[in-house]
Length: 319
Image 1 (cartoon, rainbow, N blue to C red):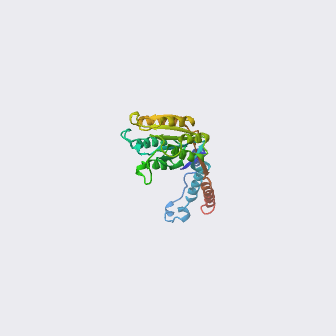
Image 2 (cartoon, helix red, strand yellow; image 1 turned 90 degrees about the horizontal axis):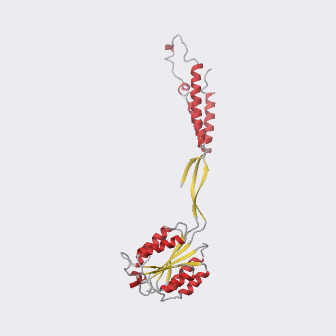
Image 3 (cartoon, rainbow, N blue to C red; image 1 turned 90 degrees about the vertical axis):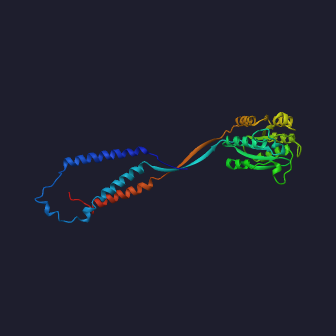
């Protein structure tokens, strides 16, 4: 964003000083100089045509006025500046890993099913972050990256909205590869230079494909990655949710385990995680200013010189 300002606006006070000078000078001129000349008969002069010098005699005055105005504006130092966002400190690197197995279509998070409720709550979570790089991982029998770590939250929100159940995706098989989902999230965070790395792992089932999630959790701990695990589903229809494994994953990585039985509870969990994992970064608006005074000072100098030259040559008055 481009801005404009005067770095030394106090110089505009010269307009007042200049105005007072002209007013005092005019009063002195009226007192000290005669206001009329006596002629025997001026009717003889009425027929004399005005020369071009007489018609244009005000030009030096106009040029001088414009020159002084530009000079004062130049002294006030007009500047243009461009704003630039500078992020000070470090953000948190976060990967949201979400189960897209068929069981996530259960309608117990009315008016949404589990996946729709999870997407809505994760969207709110993303909107509350400012300086954190966030990625998306989805998993069923296999796991894949839905979005790499990014600060472009608009694109991230679009990719989040595109998440579908595995049964709706071509070539995807149903299942819950909890270990693969966590491993995919951990692998995404390995290259991050952020001092704080977090996985938010959401599922409604138990690991039934892929690799051992406990071994993956140990690898995450070795890499300094914290895992917040969320078990989703009501107690009476939670299916094969393996809360013991999820709690163990969280404990091994110095994270926490939560159980969400409805949308409000899920929102509360993400709000808690949002408060726990705060970024140390701050945004600072830096404006780079560029002086524009030369654009008015040079014309002011030229106009003042022209005014004086014309006043003492072509438009010289008899004293």
